[in-house]
Length: 424
Ligand SMILES: Nc1ncnc2c1ncn2[C@@H]1O[C@H](COP(=O)(O)OP(=O)(O)O)[C@@H](O)[C@H]1O
Ligand SMILES: [Mg+2]
Image (cartoon, rainbow, N blue to C red; front, side):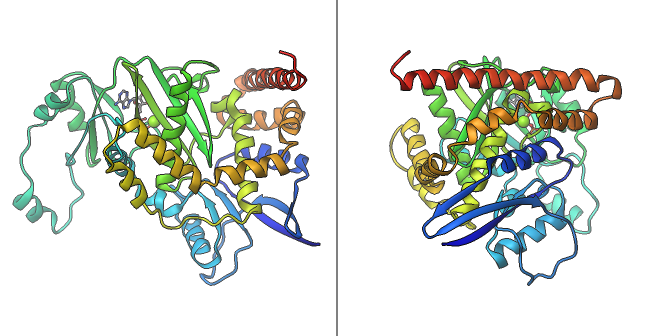
């Protein structure tokens, strides 16, 4: 029997808590899998930044990357490693680089999703360039901003066409507000988007490979309370709809790890921000939901590395558009997109892998998230974010929320155990 080792690299920036928990839980798992004639083990370490030869070997089989969206040296090292060395990466760097919010809106409109009506407007100001003047003089039409505002109706949201991180987002209630916000927008190219208001439910759907978690979200709450600990806030059919929406979006764009924001108005969920390909992963945002993320990330990373899943380098949108062009209701198309997504994500093989090789994950994680190691990881993250006099209080608060998760998990495990023995 041959022994093989698959190497997982973490390409990190300011991340503190999730890599510690990922690495330590991984150690506790003592993971090994019998694949054919081989006994496969994995290792996890952190990717360093250094000069590289474009032809050099890559020591990793899989990299979980958190830098591509802003740090070019790592992005270019990753692109080289995918092309030259067949590396698997969360997330596809080309897709991240080129799929701004605008692209994601257009593509999902084409698939039939109820994305709110959105316009793109030319910027208020430009960086000087030799061709600018003749281009604008010849082709730029004078436009009446308020007529776009009227077409969309108020309130509307002005936000950067490639936005993220809540930068430059303004709620606009009138033509005067619109004019003032445009004056302020400077060189940014902006979207104007119909406000989905009043809404009665705001969700963030976190997708990691075929795994999806739907969390209710309150954008008006302080940062550490935005992800809510609510349950049963959507029906079973809405759960399926949101899962299928997330799987479709993530697979369409080749994002292994992404979060999709949607708001419900009059019974319809409108996805409106779903190009978040470096999503929240910190305990200080996710708190109660943090263990889910660590477990889901570990499962998908170990599956991809161990099974030698090949990364889809080309996105291949044809099959999605073929479904979009069929003459049937959107809800049926969505199920067909999701079916394609599940195939591409090898859902069945992944589930078998988890049953066979990760049956100890739940119990090990439950123990682990009650350990001093986790409390210390929380403290490190809190120390990096909060003023010194609040460190104790917030460390304790996030710790308690994770203990709440453990209580709930423990109760679920007991229920499952009882059900297995025919009790209820
Ligand atoms: N069309 C909309 N309807 C209602 N609220 C919106 C809309 N667009 C944005 N918002 C509000 O503005 C916030 C930021 O907008 P979003 O599109 O999520 O930008 P970012 O990519 O910066 O997170 C959202 O969380 C939401 O509260
Ligand atoms: Mg957002």
